[in-house]
Image (tube, rainbow, N blue to C red; front, side):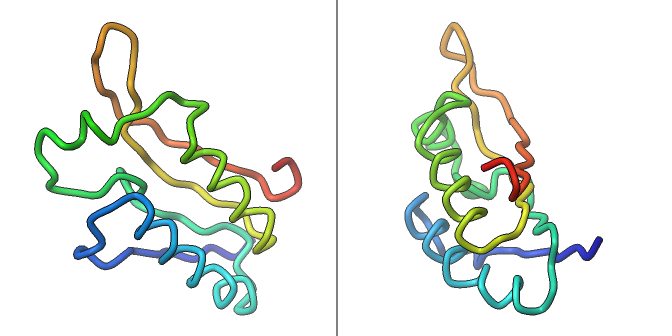
Length: 104
């Protein structure tokens, strides 16, 4: 298994910008032979965003996981990433997801 580590630029301040960056980066990682792309904690929503983390949190079956499934399928690589999950009672937790390219 060949792993690739990827870190988005810090100035990407929206979920859409971060997903667009990944969409552009994945084809090269796949061509280089990556089987699994590892992204850091809170990749999808961003870092050092203070209370905005609660605004960007979403359920485990939200739009981010759907977009990440599509990206995994399109690039033919598995992806491991983190995001802020909107939990019961208004709490926000960190969630990590691993998507297998064969099961997306």
